[in-house]
Image: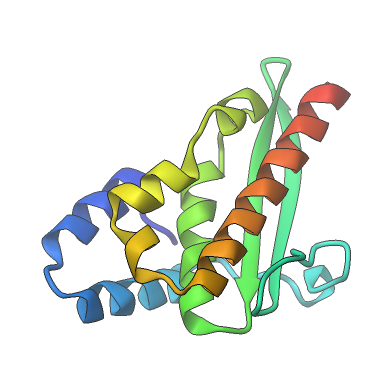
Length: 142
């Protein structure tokens, strides 16, 4: 089970070396709930990532508001950890909350923006755009 986003941020701050931080990111990927085999489909595949990335969003209603439930996966260990970070950030939020959540600011706060390759940074942006688009669709459908 993934830690909360606040726990991840706290743990990240305890790690001084980037090698330790990368290991922690990889560990987050291992803690993530597995994506079912059937969800490794073209419809869930995120375009714009150098690695293969899948994001599955289920929307449930709570108090008349759409609530997002995310699962994800990647074929690359570090990218899978980045997916886990985004799942921890967005899972359980209402669509409105998700749209007002700035994942890229979090990545900057954690120093990830400076330490990710341009390809991985573009992939993160693609994942965030996909989550935001799905949240907008969930909001429009509610």
